[in-house]
Length: 232
Image (tube, rainbow, N blue to C red; front, side, top):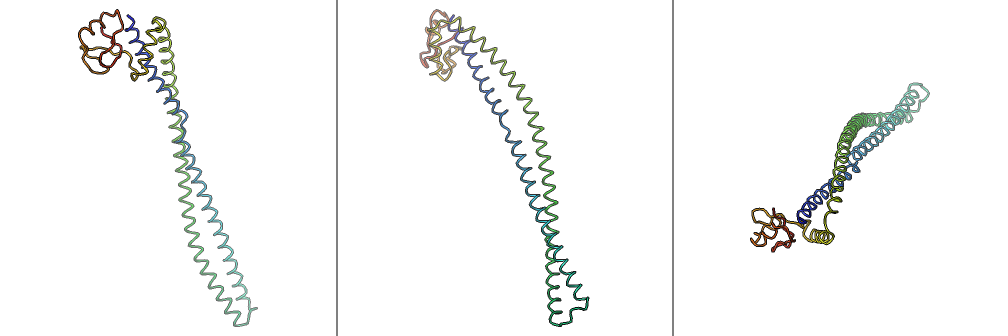
């Protein structure tokens, strides 16, 4: 019964297409490292941010040291007794006052910078932990997907062998009709008849047509959708 062979072939082709979609999906997943890449980029950004803040902290420390050195220098000159000009003494005292104001401002900025560096360091640590977790998850997922891929690949190969064996039993003209119908009927060339209903289009099959389909002596099409009818 050719139509039964075509129906079985259709079942195989449908399963092959599903497996092919599954294989393509798994291949895409195995290529997709975006989660790990994103986590790695976050680590790099956190490190760059920390480096920038540490550089600013070092600059402030150098600035503070320079200001403190200037204050010590002025204090040394003031208390040395070498400067006796009142105007020069007043100018030095004013300069020291301004320097001390700058020192207080710089110290406040340095304290804030140190806090920012501490936060940035924690951010780097958290980003690194997130990267490690993402890499561990990816390795687990990849192992599972690779195993699933191999199972699907073996199943696809087994079905392909069954298909090749089955097509050898079908005459070329019937096979060509099947291929043509499957291409034009959304992948369903052979429609099963259940309780007198074509399962492809849902329309009742006339009794005479149904009887001919059950006899299996000819290729019978559904009067409604034009598909080949398979009825047991």
